[in-house]
Image (tube, one colour):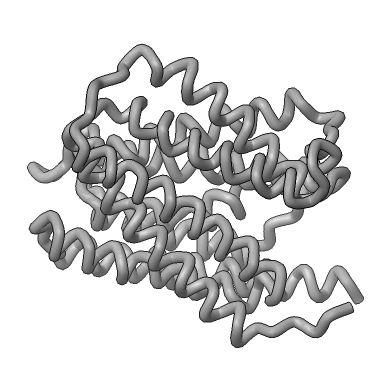
Length: 292
């Protein structure tokens, strides 16, 4: 077995979340000019093309992985398409910075739902971190204030859907290889996104088509970087660095879209991030204890 290279994995994770920030900036621009469902659909076309290329690189037609969990993969695909639709709409309505500040609660939601979905035990320390993290979300959203709008709940809905998608992916990969889940997520997701997005097709100019292609290309690159990251390093060692996406997205939001960084958002994001990192580290510690 190859020894984990966590240093390389950390750099790959940083590159991944940088690409995610660029990808989200492109999605924010495109969804500001075209229907969100159309943008998600075209993005999924690139994702499907990527997984098909990977499958054929693994052995031609025989590289297409069989599955006995098509219904589960279909549910995962629906959740992921819906999550992308919500978060891209949130980019436009709420802004990149506020969206990602709330979406950073996703690991906390995963921890909270891991009990009912996967039957895992969540101890009092992680429940305390989860509660603190959601207090941070309330600081960001500021319900009851003049600044609160119903659209502010979109990133929380997206985070919940992505948490469910991640947990179901974990369930699927207990009995099948990771690539099988990755492949069928791309194929079934493209079918689902096309079934909903094709009705909202809008003609695009050459410049926007170039941006759409760039959006798809960056999405493929980020997926490849993520695969390489987890292939060479331990997940627990690299996962905390995923929070650097907040930094990169903040830069994109301010420079490209003129967004402002509110003190409440900074404070809330700091609480959510600290809670999320603690939850990740605690989950890793519990996994080590269980392996003894």
